[in-house]
Image (cartoon, rainbow, N blue to C red; front, side):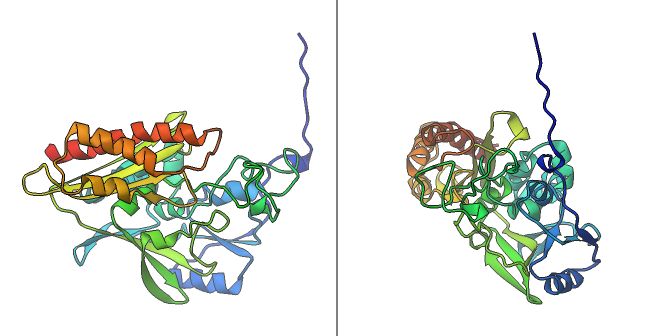
Length: 342
């Protein structure tokens, strides 16, 4: 038996490009630095998304504005809502008692992100503002691929060769949860705070999935408090459990009337199938006004699969993802309903 050994040149190995690290102490200072170094600076919270992209050569930056020295506020009640600081780590988001009590689906989604080490570093805001992904784009292109794709200023999609647009997929776990919680985002823009519905944070365009300019800073998330007759759940399919990005994920929030059975509100959101999370409004409508039961929830899971048109990604065909969604949606729906009955 013989072995062949290959040595890669320095250019072929992932190396973090040189940059100047800036460490502001306030949001105002962050905004000033973004304006001063407009076009050549980026924001780093936990660094679990932007640093790998820099290593891949996808995000060259001269200046990195670290948020690690900014104070992180605890979740707080305000005007009947729950307000979260986007600099909370995913570990703290998953463990926080106030979040688990008032927005359990978000805690569950945060716990499903990646590995323990990544959750310790990654932040809620970073998970919401991550880039879209595909097998071709997220590679070291010096030696694996050379022809540019749409996201690399090319004129084709190599993953779906006949495609006339970019088919990269947005794969956040926490975003679908916040969609189903009817959350809103607080953004610091040109010195002014503005609040937008969470779905307006995303463009639906895989080339530029996040609807924020280079000068905008996502600072907080506001979640309306739900009634006691409410149950929520998050479910995710991956090949290796929580270590990978989702093949498909689903966040469900159900509310029932005083009889504890009749559905008064349903919000079902699917992620990792498109350039932005997708609300399943047709499936939601078949639940509202109906008495919840195992048979009805099974039918809803089947309807969810029929409602979506998933983008095939990372080796999963569209047909396979639709089949997976039946199981993922059924698990989330059943768990949400069981939490109401308990």
